Length: 141
Image (tube, rainbow, N blue to C red; front, side):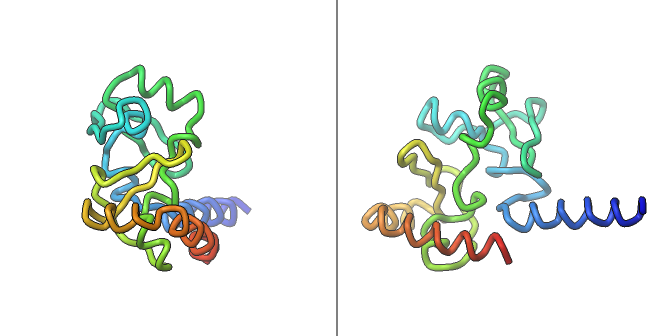
């Protein structure tokens, strides 16, 4: 029974990681998720200020940002598991550049690079709708 429980936990953890754009379990390539909303900037977090949430480790630029995150962590999670919003609208998972971001209706969207961000912005609403549908398919695979 213990072996089955351990196997379930391992498979569940692998499933969570498969659904998120993580590098060594680190979300947002170490950038502070709260800073996107509070400062409208991509600010690198510090290795010594972290919190784990939903199978990922987040880094923060300050203890106060960590405290803000802990009050409502799901609010600060990037959309589409942290994959490129444009790529997801096309039906695939693509890496991101943390500085290529947009906040839309209080949600964080990341893009592959600044040029892709510009392309995504031109059709933002329809791309978000397509990406939502595609993400539901991809994350459940």
